[in-house]
Amino acid sequence: MTTEAEARIACPTPAKHRYATLEAAERDRDRLGGARSRKLVAYDTCACGWVHLATENPPTGIGATSLTTDEIVLLGPDDFNRLVRDDVRGNIVPETAKALRDPILVKPWLAALKLFQHDLNVQKQHKGGDRSPGVVEWRRRIDAVVLCASERTAEARGIRALLSQRKRITAGTLTEALQSDDDIDAMILRMMAGELAVKKLKRNHLEEFTRLLAAEYERFGIPPTKLMERVMERNTEED
Image 1 (cartoon, helix red, strand yellow):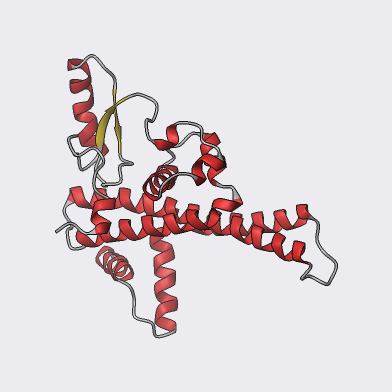
Image 2 (cartoon, rainbow, N blue to C red):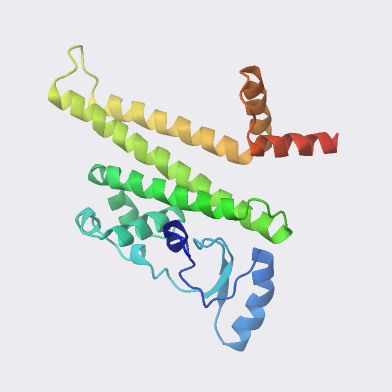
């Protein structure tokens, strides 16, 4: 029986052929495109985690058109979740992306991101014990989407923090000398930049970060995670 989480991450284009890697898809791209007189592109941003081929056209999803904040507010839960997921994959137009970041949407935005991250983790768990090359490549792509979702979450939390700070000022709860709006905005932006920098460092130097984190876990007597164990085992084999 299909779970609710599985239904949300089911492939939106199940009739399309699935490839384990971009390289495998690109091997078919020219042959199929030439036979059908159209230009195809390989993409690995589908929620199902597999690579597909598509005609090279502008995006056709809900975020492909320019939406205002008021229009986004009126979207139903399913459409809003799709919009948030398309934003994570960089598949919405800039005007809609800007409207999504309006402070009045920060609470549902965070909730939709949390749901997306949950669904991605469920999908990864289902293939947790599979170490075949195709699944390893699939997992790499899913991890990239997870990281992008984390970066969006950091961005949304920064907006929420800025909103909270402004509310405190408006309510007059700060009795000491108040900072200007520009100073507060700059402080929140620095917080966001720092959190995003940490995320990117983890992505680009994951093994080194994991080794350092494992050492701190050991220092405090915390059991290592499975990822830490895999990294440490790989380092031992290389030695």
